[in-house]
Length: 343
Image (cartoon, rainbow, N blue to C red):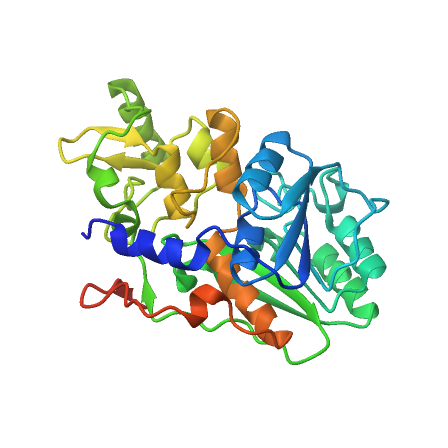
């Protein structure tokens, strides 16, 4: 296992506190800014709209753009922009949110459709959980049809962030509306493991470490037996992590994200470890209490994944490459390359 600097250097090179001067991207349901960070790193200016106060503080302090705290609705006023992005709340479509779809008051799809109708952006992109393709598939299809009726070609693809430098298996649905000719980013050659992302943190006890007690270990064992878990849920450092969610970061469940130390003790992930697995650079900080911070990380679009998507949007708009990309000369991996795809 490498010590982590190569991965962190790459995050800093591609996502390092950008000062964007390009077209404006309006980010709806922006959360803490993971999607916007990737877009800013590709040269786009951003403005975020988000209801959670801690998310807005995180966004405004970590990004060049600012987040406005507002409960978005179809009546919300938005500035004109050539690019519209966002992550409508996933709870109406996730298993944890009971998949109530249009019956869920948190459903943000109508707001997004109205925003497209009002702004008429050159291109729009949004992210959501894979659950939109299952129990609520008919509702989601109606939503896509509404967007197409506005004159856009809308491409929908199930994508895994692990294919874009994120050390985590995280499948998400990406929908892009355009006028023709948009191309999704090509997968990268290598996958980054959890061990390469965490480095020395994985074998240490950082400040704030919380260890599982003997009774918690027994509860986890019962949980894994009852759920027919073939592989223990401890983080496997030689592979990308499983999906990070609010529930397995901040919730006290048998499914929690946890590490087993060399001495046999198990501890929960600390915030910085979770943030690295989501591809947030170490300089990026989160506002609020511990639960709020974990929720921000768990809900975020991984910035490296956002960076790849934003690169395709930039190419579609025929914009020049960002400074970091056009000046990147460092081979981060060298002979210690991460896992080839398929291993």
